[in-house]
Length: 149
Ligand code: UDP
Ligand code: MG
Image 1 (cartoon, rainbow, N blue to C red):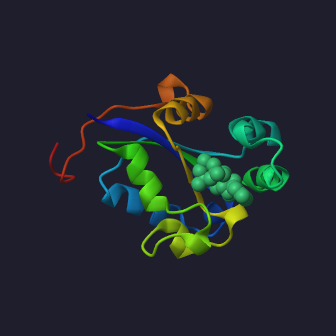
Image 2 (cartoon, protein in one colour):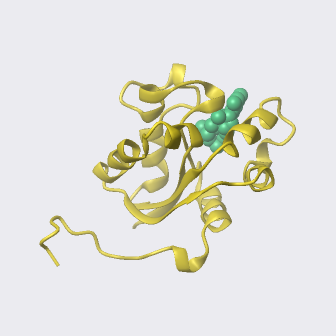
């Protein structure tokens, strides 16, 4: 059964031209892009997104960082999309992220790791609908060749 998850390429990664590299990793892992847009979110929008972390010491810095420039918001679909994208991204602290993961490859710090992804089916559903309207999400069949119409 296919499953959807939500991911973000954070502003430092957009600024550093890592969008293509990160999307390549997701696509290579057979995750289908079913929603994608560049957004420069307000502080309020970011604070609402990370509401579960409100009051924690890192929260103000996280809001500053995530509203500092455009981010790429993504809805990704795959058989085990939630766990697969978490695994591709790696541990929250890049210093602890396993080799081969995005956070290990690009760091740079816990507070400014380069990607986000949902941690459960409930957060995936909430996060997709927090950033995307229904007409910004797509269903289509993936093909193995561009010639395969
Ligand atoms: N974060 C931080 N310090 C912490 C915990 C989290 O700076 O002690 C930041 C980090 O950038 C992380 C984000 O807050 O990506 C959300 O935290 P969460 O625990 O949900 O980690 P994630 O799901 O992104 O791995
Ligand atoms: Mg999280």
